[in-house]
Image (cartoon, rainbow, N blue to C red; front, top):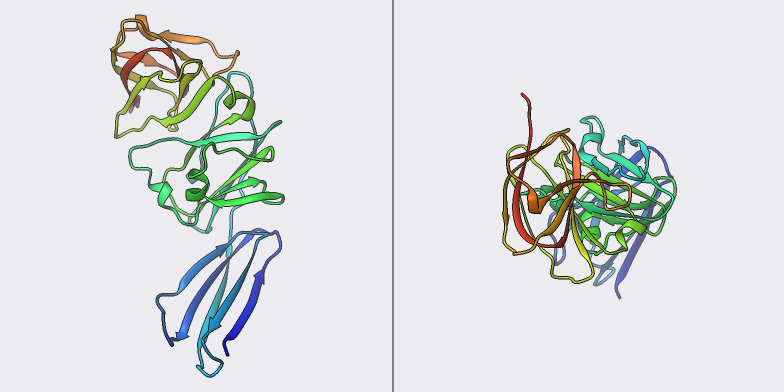
Amino acid sequence: MPAVYSFRVAMEVSSRFLHVLIACIRKTGIGGKPYKYILLPGTQMSIQVITKSVFMNSMFSITVEYHAAKIGPTIEMKTNGEMNFFDVSTMKQEEYLYGTVTYIGLEPIHWGLAYVWDNLITRCEDCYVIDGTIANMTRIQTLSDAMAIVPNDNLSNAVTFMTCVDYFFGVVLNPISEYYGKFLIYAEAVEHWFDLNIVMRNMVPGHVPTAEIVNFAGPGILMTNLTIKSPVCKAYVISGPPNNSSTVLLDLANATVPYRFDRQYFSILNVDCEFECTLKQIREN
C-alpha cells in the first residue's frame, strides 16, 4: 500500500519571505538535488509525497528560512504626455532577498519588458509579477510565465514587480485604454554599451506600430543612423506615449542625422513607412 505524506506551509502578509528547501534523505527510487521554493508574503504551498509502500522507510527533510524583504514604493501612474517606466533592479539591496515596486492607476495596466540585447532578467526563476499589491493580490506569476502571456494585462488597477537579482529589469507601463487602440505598443531600452537598432515596417493596416524608447540612465538619446526604404514615409517621433497629449518632435521623412534628443524617453510611431534607425545613450562624462 502506498504511503502518503502531506503538509502545508503558510504565512500571513508581512515584510518577510519564506525560503523552503526540500530534500530527499533516503532515496528508494528516483531522486536528485534538493528543490528550492520561495514563498511570497501572503502565499502558501502544499506538498504531497507518495512512496510505493509504507515499508520503504523513505525520508525527506524540510529547511525553512525567513528573509527580510524590502517592500518598495507604490507609485501612481502618470497621465497625459508622461511615460511610465521603472528599472525594478534599483529596488534590490544587498541585505534583502527581494526588492519590489508597485504601480497603481485608475484603470487596469498593460506593461512590457523593455528589450535589451541580453535580457538576462528573463532567466530569473525567482522574479515575480503580481496582479495587485502586496496586501491585495489577484494573481501571482513568475516573470517568465508572465512574459509568455501576450498581452501582459492586469485584472486589477495595480501591478507589483519583485526581483531577487541585480539584472536590469526595465518595465514600461501604459493604461489599458492606451494599449487597446490602434497603437501596437512595445518597449525598447537605450543602453550604454550597445547601440539600439530599430527596424520598422507597418504590415498591419489600420494600426500603428509604436516603439516606446527609454534611456533608463537619464536624459539624452542620439539617433546616429536613419535609412528610409519606402518611397513614402509617414513615421514620427513623439514626446511621450501614444496619446493626444504627446507632441511631434521629429518627422522621420525630413530628418537628418545625427539628431540629438535631450529627453529620457519618446515614442516612434510608424503610420506607413519602412525604415531602420540606430539609437544610443548620450553620456556627458
